[in-house]
Length: 336
Ligand code: DP6
Image (tube, rainbow, N blue to C red; front, side, top):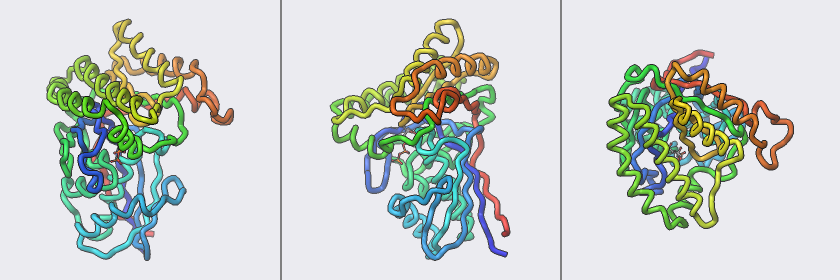
C-alpha cells in the first residue's frame, strides 16, 4: 500500500483586486487584495512521492517550468529533497478566469507539506503558495482574507460565519481557457499601460473603506467599492499596448443586467477577474431571482466570436454557479 495525500481547496475571489507585482522574481503583489474564499467550487489534488516533479490538471500535463519556483521554495521550507507527482481536478472551467490557480497552488502546498510529514502553519503555507500564484496565498484561509501589498503571506480577517447570507453567483460567459494568462497580462499592464500608476494609487485608497464595509456586512458599500476595483483594473488593462480585453458579449450583457437589477432595487454587485466570467455578490434571499435574470441575460448574448457550436448556448452563456463564503483547505491521508 502506498500513501497518497488528498487536499480539497477553494478559490479565492478578490473584491479589491491584486493586479501587478512589486517583485516579479519573488512574486510579491503590488496592491493589497481583499477576498472571499468560495464554497461551491473547488480544486481536488492528490499528491504522491515521485522521481521528478509532475503536475496534471484535469488530466493535462502542466509545463514543469511554471511550477519550478514553487517546488524549489516548498522543498527549501520543508527541508526535504522529496519530489512530487500531483494530479488535480477542478469542479469549474480551468484557466478561464475562475481563480483555478488560487485553489490549485493552495491545495498543492498543503498536500505536499503533509506528504513530507510537515504540518506548517497556514501562514507559512500561504507564503509558499504565493510563489506559485499570489492569489493562492489567500486560499489557504477560509472566510474573508487580506493579502497586503508587498506581503509574503495572506491572513484571515474574518471567518466564513461572519456573513453566512452572502452569496456569489458565478456566471460563466465562456468556459474556454483564456488566451493570455493573468501573469502575462499583469506584466503588460505594468510595462505598457500609462494608467498603471493611477491604478496602484486608487487601489490603495479603496481598501480601508472596503474593509470597513465588510466588517459591517454592508453589501451596497462593499459592492460599490468592488465595482470600482475591477473597473479600474480592466481600464488599466485596456490601456496597455497592445490592449488586453478579456470581456465577451456575454460579459457586457451581465454587467448591464446587474445595473438593471440594482435599478429595480435588487442588490447585485458584479466583479470580473482575468477572464470573461462575471461574479455577482448578493444576499441569499435574492440569489434565486438574480440567478434567473443572469442566466437569461448571458443566454441571450451573442456566443463568443470564434466559439465552436459544440460548446453551445448552455455552457457559453447559461451556467450560474452559486457560491458562499467557504472554508480553509481540507487535507487527509489516503492509502492505495
Ligand atoms: C485578477 O494570482 O493568478 O484574479 O500571481 O501571477 O499567478 P499570479 O497571478 P494570479 O492573479 C490573480 C489576479 C486576479 C485578482 C485577484 O485574485 O486578486
